[in-house]
Image 1 (cartoon, rainbow, N blue to C red):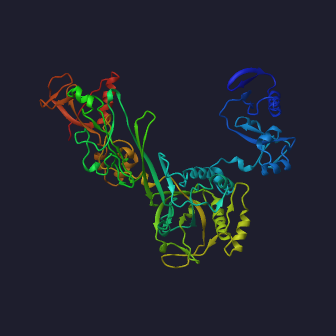
Image 2: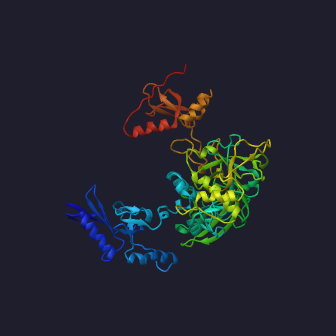
Image 3: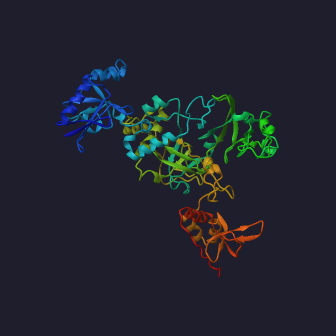
Length: 601
């Protein structure tokens, strides 16, 4: 007997699963049961699964019966003109919505030419198989599938203009490109959804090498292009603080902190604040600078404070000012003073930081060809064509053969055609302009059909031996900028538990030295450095030579004390604090440890 599941629960057992499945689908198409109910027969498990729960993604497909799609040319025309909708077609039984599970029971044709007697459904349009991000990739049918996926991922990280109201909004953080452009080669999806919100810029791309500075996926940028505003962006981050109220009339105070406050920084630290304790707009601020002066009541009232002082809120107030994140800098763009739902004072402040492309910034094409800037070269040193055109970006030739991103090459040819004929090139999946037509058009416009040109060395002026593919391509500046990631420290905070440096840039953390880094030091003959590097949490301990137990040193009496509490002759040694922590954790498991010390030779 075949088990029947309804929304994951067993409801019945039946004899003829195929017939039941067909019967339920027929009832759905005729409207006897809801159109959003999905029916799936899992042959391998011999289960019929009926799903009607919310949250399933369903997509429309055209029903095929006896090798004939139910949608005719007349209906197709009406749909294009907007005279009928998909809902109308669903009511007529021309299309139906299927989910991921039911799709396992179907045989879907990509277009009408493919339909056979065996097919159960046909795609409304082959391009519908692509998600939103993947449908932004131009000429994807000429790429390997994984590259289309990478390209889709890159599109999501591209800096552009996410909203026109960015100057009024207080997003947690946001990047806005200074001069975003619509691509010359675009897709219908881009035209429909992103037309007013571009995610990149058209750059003249050359596929070539340049003194080895663009090996391993790095790219070379033109200094003059950067000077003219190419790939410049603004990074914005929102800071906020609240003046909260507590029990007993205690509350936070916004203002320039008093010198008597615990944790008072210095007069210089508060020099940027206005009389109300808030930094004014357009003030230049640096890492760890105070943005809003704030003091809070003590967490624990000291025994020395009088009840009057407590009532007045003067006993040991703490300094809890809002400061710029460690490692960040910028200008105060916008200040908003408001109230929370509880009626507490709320201050939001937006900082902006103007970013000019620099070494290490990440760029990518829509074909998953990503790389960081390896060199920003002066325009006069860059190769140029007979028309005097120098590229904005040089991409390594090795990026193409192994990845087989043929669409990147077609896009450059298409970009060239589009720029010369003065209209955009359609690169929509399965509906794009024919690549051979584009090559013919390029030849008619006076260029080589393969997009290559003779170029001259900018340094020597000599003609280059190889012809180089050059033309406009759409490049995205990605969210991964070196300004957000650069980090170093000499000394700084450590964690209380392990006494080792904190982790992460925002906490002024240290950079971890692992096994491979250790090998580098040894390989360079600097192995003694490891003694210093791996002793970051070095701790002095006192060991009883007889029992191997750890005692301690009494500073007041200047004596070494055994674990039992009596003075003794204990040996001093150094161990990593993490090792001491391990010994203490073993004790908590009732495991005793002994340390045997050896004399240094």
